Image (cartoon, rainbow, N blue to C red; front, side, top):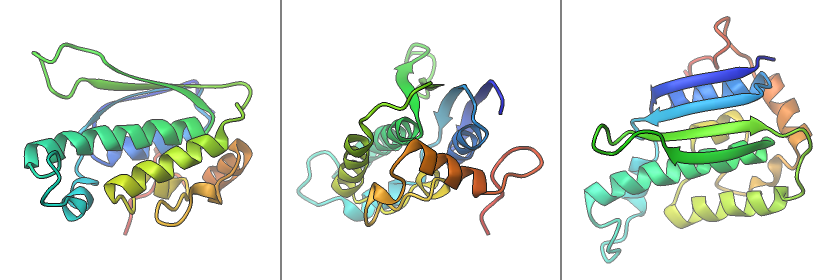
Length: 174
C-alpha cells in the first residue's frame, strides 16, 4: 500500500487509471484534479433526445459529461470504501478545469453499499452510460447491475487481482 496518490490534470481516462491504481494499492488518501472528460461524451451524444432542453446543446453536453463522469468516479470511490469530497480548488476565472476529488479510506465500511450501487445504476441509466473506465477496472458492469461487487472486501479482492505495471499503473488497454 501507499499513503497518498495525487494526480493533477490527468487527461480523460488517465484519471480513472490513477484512481484505480490508488484503490488497488490501498492508498489511504487519493487526490485527483480531472481533466478532459471525453469518454462519456459520445455516450451522452447517442442518448440525447432532440427535445431534451439540456442535452440538445453541445456545450451543455460537455458540462454534463464532466459532471456525470466525476459523479460516477465519486460514487465508485465510495463503493470502494472511501469518504469522498468533490469541490472547486481554484476560482473559475483562472481555469474551467478546477474540480478536485479527494478520497480518504475509511477504517470501517458503512452499510450503504446497496444505496451506492443503486445511485450508480440510476445515474448510468439516466444518461445512457454503458461503460466508464474506472467501473471497468473495478469490474462493475453499468449495463446490467452494479451488484457484481457487493462489498468492500469483494472490490478489494477484484482490484488486487488486476495487474499493475511496474509504475504501479493499470496496463494500457489493447
